[in-house]
Length: 341
Ligand code: F6P
Image (cartoon, protein in one colour):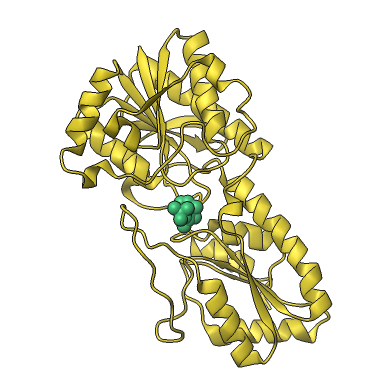
């Protein structure tokens, strides 16, 4: 079989580990051939391919990013997009596709499968918000990077008696904020799933200043206040209709300063959370997902996504995986709240 591989959406530590596992097992155990498509769905849309053999995947296990490149191209928004993809797959002699991506990339994979394209998905996102899998690779790396940042912010905040706000990624789901905030002993954690009360946040900040500690507020980029409490900046939309976020940390710092009279400063971790080498956990998970994906293709089990359930790699329908986002349940937030203030 000749199998196409692509990586779509925001990049994520562990993508190269998946590609390596797919190709290594696909060639050496099953005798398949591979072709890489560049930059997510743009590759099959424009017929932009790259060689993908065992030699091309040597040495990439610990490397961040993706050797195939990525983009947020949405072929469903392009006139005749599906037909172009079909033509280009046929022209490259591709029998089946492995699409490694988050909700958007896998949403496209699901629609293509419904139009008879043979595709298997691999869940990827630092946000950990994909349904049907307990964890996505990249999340553990992002949480570790954010936790280290919070640890560092504690000592400088205490030296200067400042409130420090740490803005992390997560536009619809607060998993990174919740885990990094809990691991880093944040004073307050704000997530998109639960609109925050700015008066309450300021009360937590003030109570922390009464001890010898300085407050650290961890805020997910998609967190927002209870309606009408604070003005927020509007952002641009990408081709999947997502707002480009960033700005809640700064807004929050201004509001905390105004209301408490204490100095408040913001650190936006941004793409640092997505760059660089994956943790051992993510390398292993990504490798196991890659092995699971090539098994599914080899067995002709299409329209599925590999997933982690407990410690097992299983298969879930792409429809189940993309139907709704996995957001933070309120009980998980309540656990973290015990440590606020
Ligand atoms: O989906 C992963 C993610 O890193 C989100 O946490 C974040 O909101 C978004 O991508 C940022 O995307 P971009 O790098 O395209 O601005």
